[in-house]
Image 1 (cartoon, rainbow, N blue to C red):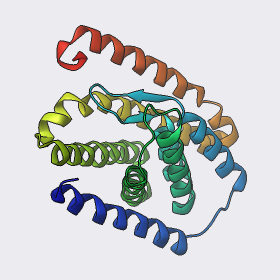
Image 2: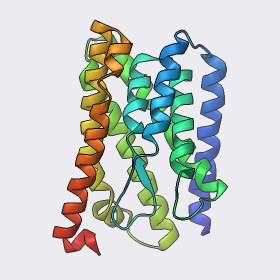
Image 3: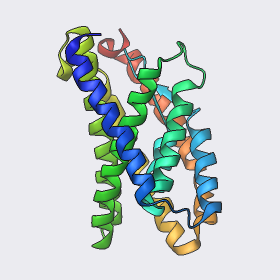
Image 4: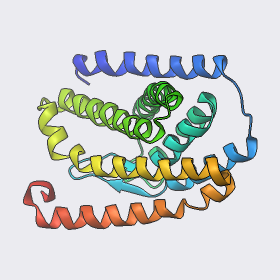
Length: 229
């Protein structure tokens, strides 16, 4: 691994794991265990529904929607536990090539840092009554941190342009993140009116989102030689 990549990856992992430990120690609360357990199980199931981006070995899944819901409705500790275990399942479930420990830790750290930033931003905007815009901004934060950092690491590993990698691959994920934020917003608003049990019944919409996006991406790849290659 090139030295420049190590200088980015190792401090990032230390930062992410440090934030995870600090957040759990600072706010170790599970006020509604049933809601937390339901969200965790759904996130783990969602992690098995993975979409593979063009020219990329990595994947993303609909567990991202559950992570946003956890950030919007639960404590920071609950949101991080949901995110960490969902990331583990996504990294290890039916992979073409078993990931190295460093890759798993990097993905977990990325999720933790994204979740902590999104949690803080969403809390500030929610206090001003801007829940849906807050969720969209949180989704954009997830997208920027995940896609930008992965593109940068790949660029350092392969001596390529980070912007070129992002343009050819990660830009196709942006509509998925925005749609996920809308679904998370609908579930969150419904939860405030009808309770979380009825709101979570809306989550089959996530499966529709997954299958629609997968179909759209496959069609886009077949129609565009730029991403099919």
